[in-house]
Each structure stands twice: as C-alpha cells, then as structure tokens.
Image (cartoon, rainbow, N blue to C red; front, top):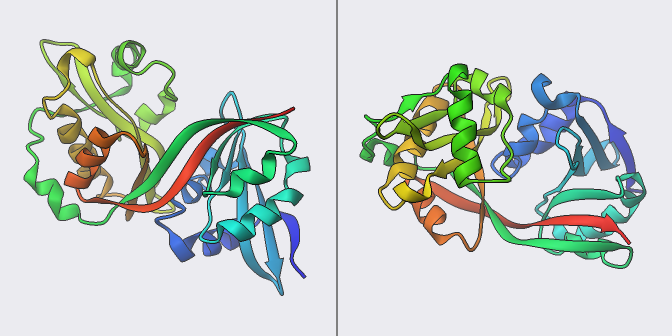
Length: 261
C-alpha cells in the first residue's frame, strides 16, 4: 500500500532525487541548509521505498510547489492527497498533466510550457570569449538591482546570492548591461541552477548573454557537478544560447499560479 507522509530525513530524500539528478537539480539544492528550513517535503512509499516526492518551498512571497517526476500520470493521482496540505494560493512547477488534478477545485493561471535543461557538454564553454566578464561582489548589488528593474521586472533575486561569488556581469561604459547568477547553489549537494540571466534591451543581440552564462558555468564547474536551468519553451533565443553552451533538454514541465476557487 502506498502512503503519503511528511519527509524529514535529508539523506533519504537525497537518495531518491539522485536517481535522476539532472531532473531534480533544484530540489537537490533545496536540501542545503541555506534553503532547508523553508522547505516541506511529502513522499509516497511502499515497503520503505520512496516512489514520488512533492516539495513545498515557502521562501518566496508566494509559496512554490514542485511536482516533477518521471511518472506524471502516477503523480497526478497521488497529488490528490497533497491538496489539503497546500496553501490556498501558490506557484507550481508540475510535470505535464499533473496540473489536471487541481482543475475541479482550483483556478489555474498557466505561465506556459517550460523545459528543464542540464549542462551535458561542458567542452562547448571553451569556444566562448569571456574576457570582458567580471565576477560581481556584494557592493555591486545596487547596480545589479537597477539592471533587473530596467530589464527584467518581476524576476526573483535574493541579494544573499551575491555572497556565493557565483554572479557575473558585463559593463559597457561603466554601468552593468548584462548579468547572470544562480537561483540554487549548493557545494554540499554538488548542484547549481542558473537564474537571473538578463541583458539590457539597448544591448541585446550582441552575444552578451552567451558570454556571461559561459563564464558563470566555468566558475560553477569548479564547485559542483550538475548545472541546470529552467526556460520557457517559447523562448527560442534563450534555448539557442543554452544549446550553444552545451545544455540539453532534460524534461518538459509547466508553470502555474494555482488558487482555490
């Protein structure tokens, strides 16, 4: 019999996620002490073996539910047990079809199909000229936030991530015009998820995004084994950039804002 339970054993959760580390890069990173206290994990098990995991992350203004799996149809049915445990409104990353379980009782606002991508051919990074890229420091915070406000309003940026040393930028005439950082980073679990990649509208189509992302990946590979990212399926320019750098699609998924009716 499969039963749902709240999971609190990091080692056990990690063992399950490691079965497909590229699929679960974000969740593996959330095991790190930096994120752990803001996570709640639910799982299903038979004879002491985990079958699926759902993560509720409360470290953002709107909580995020992650239901990513290799067996979407099975998780869709199991998710019925999780619904009473979730907040009335949340953001969600769900494998295709899992969202259907919420339709009878919730309002779904789709943010479109997305892909999880992972860096599988790091040799491509050597082909990119990163000489103009600089590592950003905590004192660059104001300029970085200004760039995001002008070029990527509404993005999720935590200033603490500058302290990791894994944020890079490119300047033209002084101000930052392009930057890339991380959403998840854990040396302990050997994973990083790239995020907050942005180029000012006046400086796009010049290859800046490619070179700063390449430099970031080079730095991350000194510390972690797996590097991933999430990208909108319709963002063909971004996908072309990431493919050029050696990233490949791992799995499709959808992003939604979900609220009780």
